[in-house]
Length: 350
Ligand SMILES: *[C@@H]1O[C@H](CO)[C@@H](O)[C@H](O)[C@H]1NC(C)=O
Ligand SMILES: *[C@@H]1O[C@H](CO)[C@@H](O)[C@H](O)[C@H]1NC(C)=O
Image 1 (tube, rainbow, N blue to C red):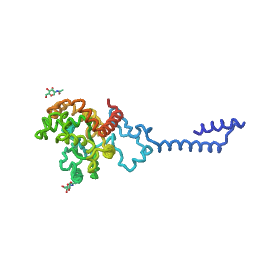
Image 2: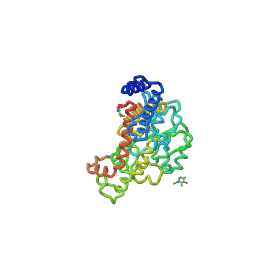
Image 3: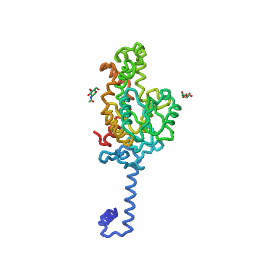
Image 4: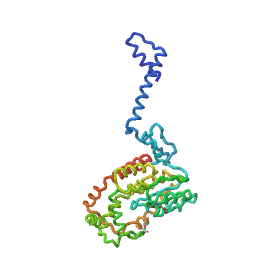
């Protein structure tokens, strides 16, 4: 820097016939240069954040393991995010002094994930996780849910179709979840409730629902149609949380769901359950290392048990109608998918 300044000084003086630069002159010029550089840096920081790349999430992998070093720097925190809880998405967690909160979305492969977790627990002798089902009464009752989580031993894994909640439990709570293509999820939910599978009984078999979702979405007066509208709202609702307003799909719900998504350590994809488990194993190596292996070993059995009994291929127009009704849900799904892709790249998966 000093050399560069000296050079600039000499060049400036060349026109005046004098060729030497005194030290005070050099320092004055140096100060001006520094001021200009700082000004540019500061204006970059306070303008939009599109240039931020992935520095804040720079995970480094050494020989297949996640190293603890992170490149996060105070400089790169967005002003608007300052009062939000720290983003935890994709950050590794070592040890096992925590409670994993898995507020599973129905029909996203959650039982396959559960069975991989259970198999993994069975193979570990040191500090096994306590696997607990969240009581259905607590799914939408924040007081009950918080009480339930506060009572858990550490480490534990709690799962159920609960709404998102910020916990003030004395133990650290780690959030995980999985999302699925919105239309696929709705269709799967329809046939699951109508016909069940080898593990679960059908819940709406007696209610005169049409045998196919194609017929159902034409019968807006039938109860089945209400059910379809309900299924469409489920994912956003669970990510949005306990607020009554979370039951309606709108931009506010979407924003809240996206904001809460940043509190999760992993949100995987049903279409990539294997990679989802790999990511879970890599980000929580002391608790879930080896879980992908367990999934592969037992995949066979789980798939058979949890395969919905009858599933008709939907007509293209059915898919089109459902898709048009679910644009906000796709916005959320795409948001999550992009983050998962980036996370996989950071972890050098694929
Ligand atoms: C939640 O459950 C508690 C205990 O059963 C009950 O007193 C309370 O009214 C419930 N809250 C809501 C919002 O249902
Ligand atoms: C899957 O399960 C079936 C029946 O239990 C068994 O015959 C088959 O070999 C298994 N396949 C794999 C790849 O484990």
